[in-house]
Figure 1: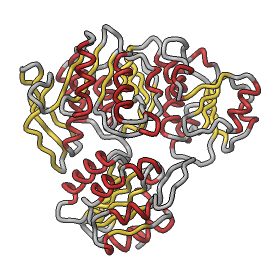
Figure 2: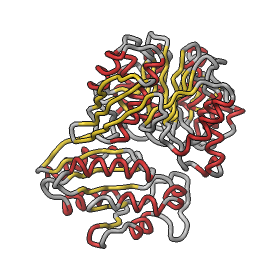
Figure 3: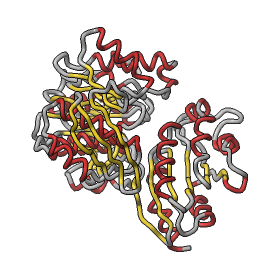
Figure 4: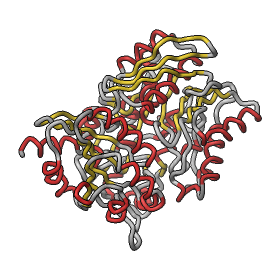
Length: 472
């Protein structure tokens, strides 16, 4: 994506977009933007081919949803918004250009909504959604009423987008297509930098340069927050500080501004001791297990403290944080089998999630249903993915979800299954979702933990597995 051709934050407001039509309005990213615009009073319509769960709520807020992609959907529309997944020859994009309507990438519409707010943009290879959600909940507890758009729903609120009355705007910043380069944050959070989306960035050096450019777009009177423990951000920290920019760090390393120690993760959640600028803050608790969850919360804690929010409100928010849907989300228990949905698809995230789920499983076994996300990632990171999946006791691998991509010879789910270091009876390739439920029923037993993991369609299928287990 050539971001130089996109309209950056500060040049338009959401109201100037007029009536907005979103192609693929039921997706998580588009749905969050739609909720934000609707709660702001901007007229919204959209098109879909499937009745996604989010659509009912969008209709209740006044949105119009067309269950087909057709040129007539654009009648009365001023701006058409598309995502990177939508091809430029899509019937509604072609019609919009023919009519002379404004056509915008999702990031441009989001940037317009940021205008006039103090934006906290959360970027990084892993942990963006959870960190963005925690930051939002902290601001809410502190009475700031932020606007927000998140790549997942905060479980208790059932929402991933909202127009608030406060001055802050919290947004997940996506590096995958370079669109985060059109945001102009007051605060930039970078959780980590690891090789991913190299089909767009070329190599790791190009990706790191992109993150540096993103960080340099931060207001000069704002600041950057990042994890000092992460190997990928070392050059970024040095480069920003050499340019006179303000950088605050968190992590377990001694040099961190917010240092966490005595980290304990259990089924009940994660807790740690926090020290800011050498002064103890006390114990911080999050009701979600996993050391990586502790680090995500530390990013938000440090940001909140530097913004001057009260520590008591911060700790209250963390202790009550309900988690994010599809991020370590427990769907229920049937016949002694616990079922979770988990969005992880990059090897590092897969390993972190499965190690945590291994703790949760206790004496039970860990059964994973995994659909690889994107052909290029599955090909380039196959050995690392296989290593992560081998943490499980039983693995069911589906075919790669890669819209618009072509699999080459020897690529895909079959090759990934073969690479997993488990005996043949404990791993299987099941290409279609229709056959997965029966395989889960056959392999699971009381005490087990089952998790759907990977590409977006699969990482929200836990309810269907529960139903299948109940019928068995």
